[in-house]
Length: 266
Image 1 (spheres, rainbow, N blue to C red):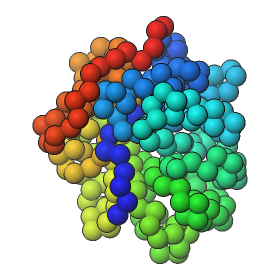
Image 2 (cartoon, rainbow, N blue to C red):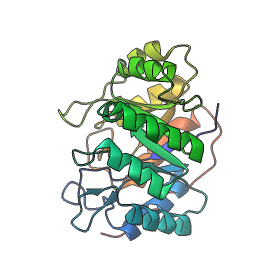
Image 3 (tube, one colour):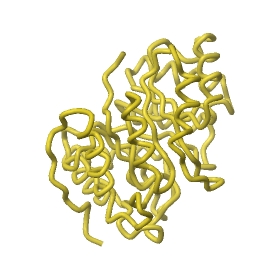
């Protein structure tokens, strides 16, 4: 099994903007500053989304490379995972083209999105395996594990691409995550040798993260899925929730100490 960061921050996502939270990072310099603050707070990896000139979701390779360069300047030890999310805009061919142009160290790929074009998906996964891209399969329900197993049997997904993210709750329709959802994923994943992490929608994000840590998984927190504290109040910035997630980890392992710093000025 490959090594993977235990705590990932997803600071912006494809849909939220400054009207949702004034410190949601959109511009390259904001993303880089957020990466630095969140790494200092204890996140080992950033799940990276970039936006176009109008603030909309983008898979533009040039924007990705600029953001990645900026993150390396601000937080050189932080791992970077790009997204291939289609967000209602991109087909599988465009997602494949993005990976070909960027060739990141790591990328997330939603299995349901790939199912729109299995032939192109096979090309994407083959390229990722050949290029050494660490793919994390995004799974929205335990039944997605059946498709994953089927594609692995058919060799659409090459051997070794065994990292998954269990998504608890949902954005559309809005559904608050429940830590109890994790048990269904774990039952379906039993015995498959998967590296797994969890992300969760809404202010129950940290409760779900704690459940994942206690079960031996990794966690992803951040404004992509949740902009609130556990009590429902608006979080100060991404790094604040990273600090809280790291505090849960303190109960389980010996983490490095990390002071909190705000992400950037409004």
